[in-house]
Amino acid sequence: MTIRRYVLIFLTLFLATGFGKNLERLSRTILSNYELLDIHMDGLTAYITGGLGGLNIVDLNDPLNPLVLGEYQASGCDWGRIYAWATYGNYAFGTGRDCGIHVINVSNLNNPQHIQTYHAGGDIRYEHPTVQGSSLFVARHQDGIEILSLDDPTNITPVTVIPTFNAWASLAEDSILFVADGTAGLNIINIGNATQPTRRASLTTTGSARDLDKSGDFLFIAVGAAGVDMIDVGDPYNPIFIDNYNTTGFASRVAVNESLVAVSDWDDVEVLSYSATGLELMAYKNTGGRVMAIAMHDDIIYSAEWIKFQTFRINENLTVDIDFPARKLEFPRIANGSQGIVNLIVENTGAEYLTIDDIQIQSSTFTIPIPTDPIAPGDSIALPVTYIPNGSTWNSNAIFYSNATDEPAASTLLIGNYPYGPMPRDPAPSFDLAVVNGTGNLSWDDLLGNPAVIAFFTGW
Image (cartoon, rainbow, N blue to C red; front, side, top):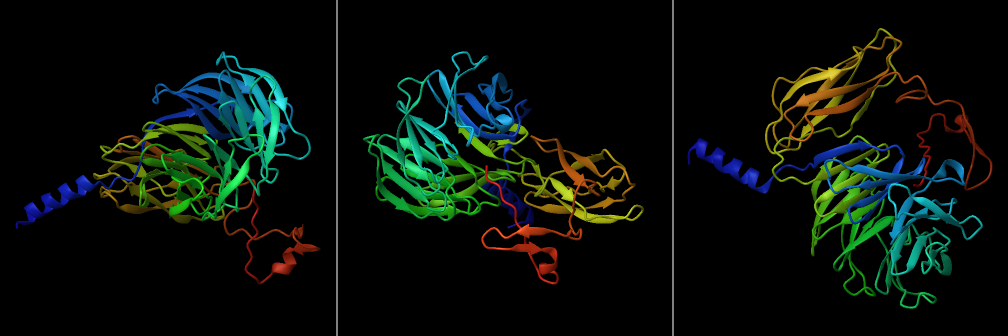
């Protein structure tokens, strides 16, 4: 066999199996109600939660051009935070933890009107809602799943509460309610009689169950830092664990169709394919934003990323694609007049060679050499980024112009001497903190000479 023939056969096999692991970006939209936290799809109308404002109602008939139809500004509690929405006929129900449940009339999508705010009282925090028939199911963490009647949507009324350990979300199907119950895993409730629901089965999940979606006999659960679990619920009272795929970040939401599972994973969007035997990575995109929530309609994937709303699809013909494992590069603090060098990794996740034609940086305090050689499919390069601080400019976008099909101008953020807070390798300031699970205080002096990690958590 000649070398030429061998190469041709190799390339044919390579392209047939496909290397490209990225998504084609179709659109990128900045919505006026930002802090995007969730997406609820009602057909091709999306109810996109804006944590600082309430709601963006968006027409997605053209995924290349999402069209904002209307907005709702929540009120009645700090910042008007609403975390998730569900719809029923001409009404939408937004849950806002201690803000309760906002009921709005959306018969005119251009001008939604507030009808009622419901709260059962006390310190109850309302999380994700779901609707089946004329019932609204709302997760309330340790305060259970509350079932409310929608017989009169303008005046929702309580029916009963299902006890839970730490319910984040639920999914109703016929007489079954699947509950993502935090570290208690999956709980399965019979809701044939809504006034007397009964727990019928449970299953320990790989991580903390945060969200769930279902296709056919398979249930998919976002389990935080452990990724995604796949469960066979063909017999809902005998759930069987099939597989876990440990994503690279923190899986907070899942959305499924007949063959794919889309995952909001904080640092990227990951798309898994599934079969009866398990899960495998199909595609991904490091978007550069905080990927908070995900939705899917047919083959289009919708991503809520705090500030940005983006649409994607898997494109098997996507030949060249550029990606960065991290779209933010931080330097340790450097004295004025000195220089620091940190490597920026650039990947080609397409099926053909990636050529970088130019790199434009807004500030001369940062420099990056333009690679002279193309990047092979599946390969990556480390570009040395030089930073020479001048006492003023401390950050800049670096825009890479290339032959990438869907992102010919891709950017990453360069951060130097951040003037408003600590940076990598800065010395720890003195502190004196109360010990949460005990008594007394913990101070800076107590940790001198010892390795220590102080973690601050928040939950969305």
